[in-house]
Every structure is written in C-alpha cells, then in structure tokens.
Length: 108
Image (tube, rainbow, N blue to C red; front, side, top):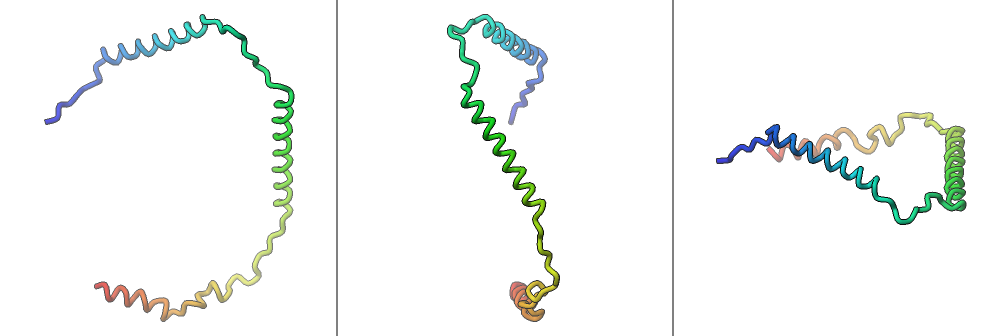
C-alpha cells in the first residue's frame, strides 16, 4: 500500500519562506557591501554605436521600401473563376466514385 505524504504542514512552509526571504536579503546586502577591485568600463566605443545606428536606419529604410513596393503592387485577378482544371475535369464521376466503392465493398 502507498502511504500518503502530506506536505502542507504550515511549520514546514513557514520555515522555507523564512529561508527564502533571508537568503534574498543576505545576497542583496553582501553584493552591495563588496566593492569591485576595478571599475568596469561602461561605455561602448563610438564605432559600435555608429554601427548599431547605421544598421537600424538601413533596416528601417529596407522595411519602408518593401512596404511601398508591395503597396503599389497590382495583382492580376483571374477573369474566369471556373476552369477545366478545377471543375474535376480530370476526374469523371464514375472513376472518382468507383475505386473507393470497390475498396469499401472488398473490406467488408
């Protein structure tokens, strides 16, 4: 027989909550009280900034150009909606229904 384990004990849950909150605050205080030995450089070189700006502007111009090209695009609509190829011209009614009927009759 299986034993049911009830883990909804409030003493267990409260102790895990206290451990969670205490570790979050301890990590925050410890990381704020340790000073870095060297100050990291927080800026990017000017060529990286200009490259990012150039790529962004080129992407915007390309998207705008594609939008204008597709906006002015004239699509040709078919004048005759019913053509021989989509009116089951290749499948006569007899041949279209005879093989499935034979297959279903043989499978009984």
